[in-house]
Length: 236
Image (cartoon, rainbow, N blue to C red; front, side, top):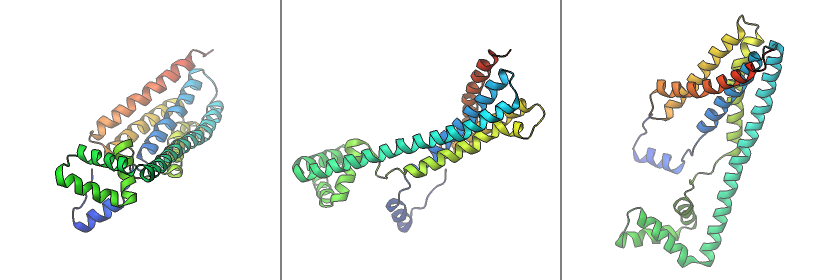
């Protein structure tokens, strides 16, 4: 985890432009789902003893169609989250206009729960409620538990799609290039993707890279094993 500077200029620049949640969740989500679902198709079809051509056709269809579907779903979900924040902001603007004393008391209660009291609490309440935008931002965070940085639906969708596309193509590569023992190669490469995603994810957590990698490997491997087992039931 990278430390940040604490000079006055660095603090001001960082606080005035918070990064928000970023696209880490979208990349991890898209990458894992892309590799899991594509390898699930590979494992299922291979378990059923069907030809590599069918594996490639179904795998490519999954990468493109399911990847787009996931991106569209993430876009819609993130946009719904953004619309909800805008709706709540409009409600708070209306309440401040109609019930300023009640909204002021809510600000006071939020600040009191943060540990302020006495004259400091009174002064802080006055300072916050003098600025309309700051007043609403505090209400959104303190009353509704929502972040002050709006999500970005388009960025979330693009990150999800490309992560799905890149990770989802890996299980198909041995079949596209007619590698010997293509299924075994696909399985090992996919397990490598699972581990790599988990290890990369550890850069934003306190878990060691190897533990995060193994955790993701076990989750993806379980999904792949289930798909192969189901496919083997239809083996002629």
